[in-house]
Image 1: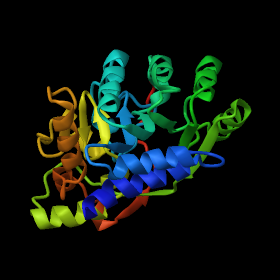
Image 2: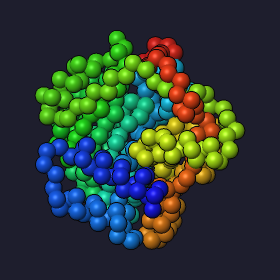
Image 3: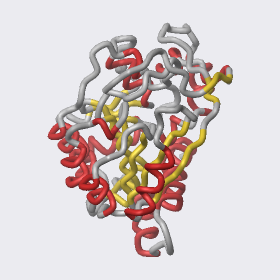
Amino acid sequence: MGSYWKRVFRPCIREYYFNTPGKKKIGDLFKMIKGLIVPNSLVYPDIVCELTTHCSLKCAHCNNLMSCYEKPYHVPAEDVIKDVENLLSRTDFCVKLTLLGGEPFVYPELAKVVKAFQNHEKIYCLTFVTNGTVIPKDELMDLIAASKNPKIVISDYGLKVQKVQELSELCKKKGIHCELGKATSWVDPGGTENRGKDIPQLAKEYNACFSARYCRTLLNGKLYTCARAASLVDLGYMDGKHDSFDLRKERTDKEFKKELREFLTIEYADACNYCDHALKKVIPAGEQLEQKQV
């Protein structure tokens, strides 16, 4: 129960309160808590969905390894929609759907994905995480504004190419909640080599990591322990068998929920073997390797 409380129950409550503006609905809160405690029910805190590995920046120390992609690609919208729908159909509901990249606003089929989930009965909040370098067209912003509890989170690294103020003002104009994440420093995740840590050390690091609770990432039909894990597997640095849950595998609903609960409460992640966050080495945020055009 301890792992379930830490990785599922508490994150669901937190995401609901931080992402549902205004007065909370007792009925919605009761429905969520019921889904968290009733056997064979399952509430998912946050589907972090990676739409593309294309990015408008090329950060030297990108935690999600976007700068390592020599041939970045877009995930087809029909695959994204099918995978998210598959997860939603097997769970009672999801507090938040987060769309990111790379850079989500360079994803050519973003409008199609937004239309599919903007008012989905099983999603409370639709969130976009952007680096603020791309100003979406009015038509897309109107779609986002018409979504259920929409939010745009801007990661502000203080770079000249970023249009943070312009995007923030556009969000205000459209009635979209905008959250500014000012970051002058990062914690260095290090390179992609295997550190050779033992399982007790991996468990210690994973249980202390924010990603273990809030950043499980969907990419190409699989949920991963974090966004870095998704990229490590996608780029071929690790096999990912322990760190992933295959949404496309044939199962009964009962088997799906049981195996997903087990995945959500695993005690360690292999991805921590390819990460130095536990060392807490501070580096400047958003340092660029080179100028990049998308």
